[in-house]
Length: 120
Image 1 (cartoon, rainbow, N blue to C red):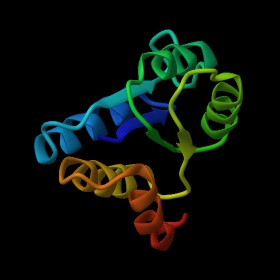
Image 2 (image 1 turned 180 degrees about the vertical axis):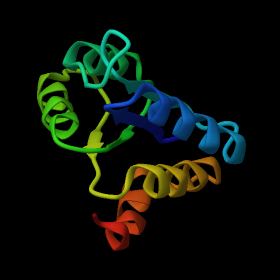
Image 3 (image 1 turned 30 degrees about the vertical axis):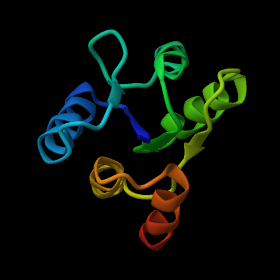
Image 4 (image 1 turned 90 degrees about the vertical axis):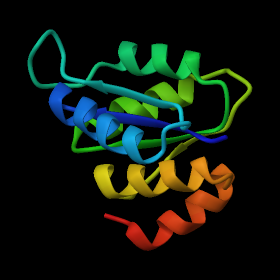
């Protein structure tokens, strides 16, 4: 089952999005990270740690600016056995669609095709 990774500059956005989609797709594994030291920002080390914990192919969603840059760098450094995909879909709507699709058995590649219509 494809996993979801959410990166936001805000802990509240990351955790709120995770809470929303967890209620709709209970069996989907969702990783979320937001904020740095209680403030706004993203942290490549937090992202790298989450990627090291994935147990299946993973679709990554981000909000703005440096979250994409940090996510891209973390994906480049990832050496695990799973495919990690950076998506261009909006963080809330895209991760919601991906989680629901994953919960019904869609593969990461199938989900990526469905996300194409949601590009930012």
